[in-house]
Image (cartoon, rainbow, N blue to C red):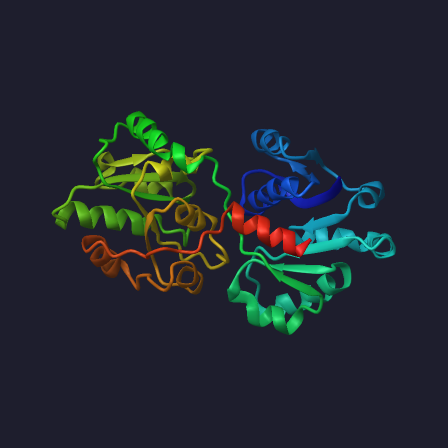
Length: 326
């Protein structure tokens, strides 16, 4: 069996960490064993990923010699690999750099000097950086959209929906609008609350509003006029179950560094109706059926206008892509 090292800054719930975990699940089915390397910040997350590979806090020469693939998820680890460069080159190890953040062109051009030196492969996760990748990346490039692996089988969704709605005291026939995010600037909590306010005061239809998450902007919901009309769960470990229980997913994120929103991909894979603001990446994922502002969101909600069948970035997609890349 071959071995893949996933080089992370820390082991906790987060975007890059989730990507590494999903990679490991697919690699396991391709007979590649995973080792996660990073500081153990969350014991819960560490316990979870240990089901899919070994966990350790530091990398050594021995680890590199035993590995076949190295997946670099952070720039800090990219720099750490420079000291092992002779070893990597001599033993022809494949080193993949995954770009998780959207850098300025100047910063990316400088970063690529190190990427081109240390790595053998570049994994492009989003189309919005295509121009700069073509311009500055000189090593082999593969396009691998971030993907979401459903936790539950589709045949079980109806029962999960029934149980979760019962748990949340939501009527089985109610139409549920859901929002999920870390409550910070750009993620859209204020927009969700504006949607709640407007539909409660002007819509002919009654909705159930489900908000999943927490963070620095929690005061917005704590002081919200219709706080009693909103089901707020705080952080949860299995967002998928709440999505299954919902009907419409509102994704108002305008976060500056959003390159491939996993929350949106999760909702797409679960066949949710989706309302979202117009950004390059949202247009790409939702076949250009996005909204310019909240007024347009409300118009689409009232008239049942949602994206149709969308590309699923799921297990089948990921297995095929990894088979090609490796």
